[in-house]
Image (cartoon, rainbow over all chains, first blue to last red; front, top):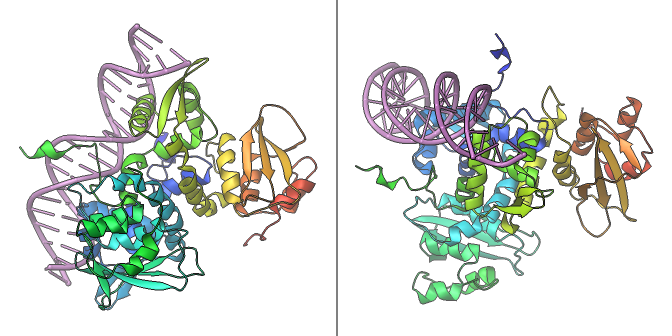
Amino acid sequence: MDEVKRVASRSYGQFCALARALDVVGDRWNLLIVRELLPGPLRYGELKSSLGGIATNLLTERLRSLESSEILERRLGESGVVYALTRWGSELREPMEALGRWGAPLVASGRGDDYFHPRWLVLAIPALLQGTTADPPLSVGLEVEGYLINLRVDQTGPHATADLDPRPSTVLSAPPDTVVALAAGAITVDQAIDVGHLEGDAEDLWRVFRRSPPKT
Amino acid sequence: MDEVKRVASRSYGQFCALARALDVVGDRWNLLIVRELLPGPLRYGELKSSLGGIATNLLTERLRSLESSEILERRLGESGVVYALTRWGSELREPMEALGRWGAPLVASGRGDDYFHPRWLVLAIPALLQGTTADPPLSVGLEVEGYLINLRVDQTGPHATADLDPRPSTVLSAPPDTVVALAAGAITVDQAIDVGHLEGDAEDLWRVFRRSPPKT
DNA sequence: CCGCATCCTCATGGATACTG
DNA sequence: CAGTATCCATGAGGATGCGG
């Protein structure tokens, strides 16, 4: 007769901003769902496939939960329902970029047989290039597994921006491993070219990724 | 015959810095354990009690897991084994502060019958005061539930620092709700005094917490 | 097809008792 | 005090069903 108090599903019950944040986004898959939506709204099926193997009941349950927490909302797009971050939800970008930066050493060890989606670079590259500036501003297209990532760096903002972009431009082509290793600072542009993993005019890339040499 | 591939306990299996970070610290209680250790090393029993109700088997398992991930290490202190963050583990402060800042609206709604430990303010106050400076520098003691938090703000660094400190000084006494609400910007120093929830000379506090008025 | 809902199995979390 | 051991409740993951 005392189990009435179980209001939310599994709260830490702590008066602490971090703990309450984790009450809301700490459950498995939640932050990865937000990661998928940061570049823009997606449909259910797109979420499911780009998350790579989440169970359908979990995805549904998480979407409902995040919706009731005002982190995302269901919208009616042209082709049906899309899920989009709210203003507050999109403000998760900062903590997520910080966590990604902290986790950079974990990707520098290389891709194993892990799943990968180019969309993730849209969050990862600006996060890992934090503090980089370019004057004059430059814009590089990076083609990874058929997707074109548009990377822009200017002199004003202390951070780079990147977008998925359907139209072609002057692009460099590279496999995921190379791009991630470059962003994480694990290899240099020279090394990427030497191994033949970077095709195109790398001059602009030099200006972006010329940073501290690899730790070795 | 195909279940051989289950290497780690439950990895997302994604080549993404955020996902791999979550593989390591994303499990329940992990970030809260790090939060406890950020102010300094703790013993097992201290962790257990200040986390407020974690099961002993879970605490043990998480400590082992975080140890093997090189986030914390067991040290032999004077009074036995203590758990201390490694260098890399302590670098989780940034993402955690960012997440706490994001979660500030969730504490502004007030403490319910949630558990509270003054130690948490050591992380929360500097995080929420990010960007605040003081010239000349000031140092305020905040007494909350018998603990003394020493809050320092100077002109150089863009962030405040705070420590648990056993020796007395000029202190202001306040209940947790008031301190958290002040830091989160939900109330002003004036309002705290008016309701009688802030005792002592609040002049220094004024210089720290005079920020944007409550949203209301 | 897409967008879920249901079912089933098993791993994980949580509370409590117990032990060196 | 610092954990193990145990038992039960819950959540994750995969397969499948089903209406639109």
